[in-house]
Amino acid sequence: MPLRNRVLPNGEIVAVAGRGLFTGNRGILHDAQRQLGRARWRHPHWIICALDYKDVRRRVMSPGTWTELFFLDEAVALAAGHRPCALCRRSAYEAFRDGWQAATGSRASAEAMDRALHAARLGADLRQQSYAADWTSLPSGAFVQLEGASWLLMGDRLRRFTPEGYDATLRRPASGKAEVMTPAPTIAVLQAGYRPALHPSA
Image (cartoon, rainbow, N blue to C red; front, side, top):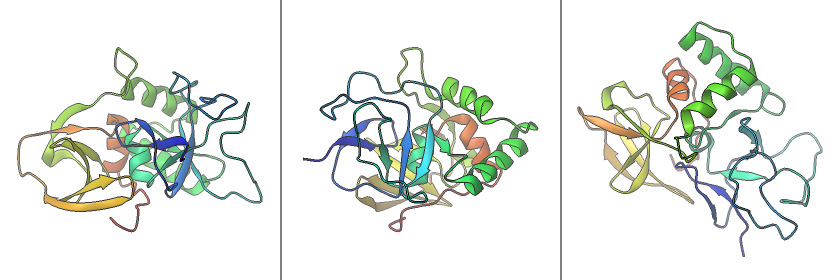
């Protein structure tokens, strides 16, 4: 039985086979039986980590240590509200900071970015929120909700997300409003040129 540790673009954590390309951290969310409790985060520092780092070996969801969450790819992790880890993904972290600086004019610290992301990704009910934006304003790498599914925007196309990879393709609407899942600060970083690592099926 798969553990419940796979994150969807809308932030939900589900149990599916396969890990994806990246792991991540929101604190300790599981118990001694490797089951999730009610909490979906313990701190605002939501990061995207490499699956392999030096010679570190971990038993997934070991008692008393952070809960390993897994993402199909980096675009999914960004949509769920995470940002690159400064330790195991230093080059991606600096590229993300470069995009943040280009978008805001400020060379923000990890803590400052995390505060802004935390405020943007959660609604008043502390659940992940979506928002409306013009289709024409959205960059590649953004996630939107459409027809009851999550879709990755790539140029003038949309690719439908599944936990195993991307399948169906639609053309990006030429006008109107999209229901955007990727937090607004991350959209600005994508608009500034940051390019997330994508699953081969994309």
